[in-house]
Image (cartoon, one colour):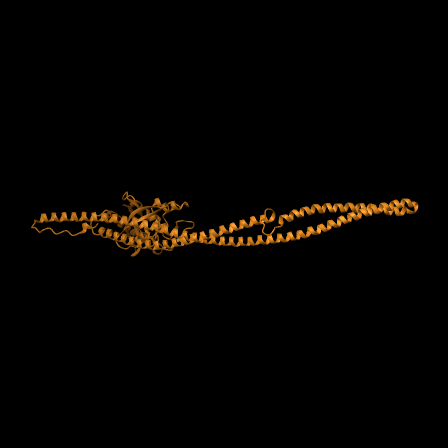
Length: 454
């Protein structure tokens, strides 16, 4: 890749005139400058590739982290499911016991019903005996009435009693027959109920409550079997997700190492670009470097004039007590110098946007990456749409990422960086950024960031 850096063999010395020598020096200077420009262009492309690679690794890291978190949540849910399945197993075991208990109780009821049937049979026999006695009593009463009529006046009182006994015997007979009829119906119903709850040893139930018990028991067993199988499946899935999580953790370690390599590669390319730009030779970045240095000097002079005019104190200008603005996402903050920067910075920053059609933004940052006043096209109030707000509401925000902090804290004459800018909604743009420090009253206030496209 860097074959053109190899030293060339020196040409043989020859005697030349001064004019010819000056021409040769000029030609050599032009060749050297062209070589530096070509080298700068190639290193710039390397930096672009390195920034893209770093961005791809960073995106992959975010995805892996998200997947690891999702796997952790899945494992927790699987644990809950397994716990629920254990509870189902306990409940089904209790249900089986309850069905067995109910079956035993039903068998006991069947035994009690058999005893009731026996008692009813005894009652029915007694009612039949009463009916027979009532018939005999009526017959006796009838004979007594006949004899009383034969006795004439002397048997009249006896006839009244005999008549009453006959009526009473008739009512007793009717009641006895009613009892017997009721007992017959009750016996039939109890017999049917007894068949429903009675079970013969070694015989599968084909009707009644025991058949229902059998269906319930079979259903409970199926539920328990399904819960057991599901529990085993969940355990297998949990083992696989845990193994996958471990593999992802290993992948994270590898990605961290790759990120470190990409950072070193990107830093190297930036150092090369920086060295080439500072060599005095003209490169494609030279105009942007000069512009940002001039802009930073103008901002420093404007701030110092504001201090001299008493428009702000040094403490307020360097205020870094960032006060959060409620209900903002991404988070926005206020400091004591925002009113001044809103007045002083736009007349310097906005014209620099027209420096080239490649320029994306020009903003002053304090030493912690805080942007009090952004370019007007990025200073729209937030709408509550994260993607839109990320791209269009960039003022009053702290950009303390790698690039933002490097630009904010750089105190060398200039700094060149290559990076991806997050535009929200998964959209990125690849940029170069030239920055220069802003020094106020002998102190480092921050820097001016001048970003442009390749």
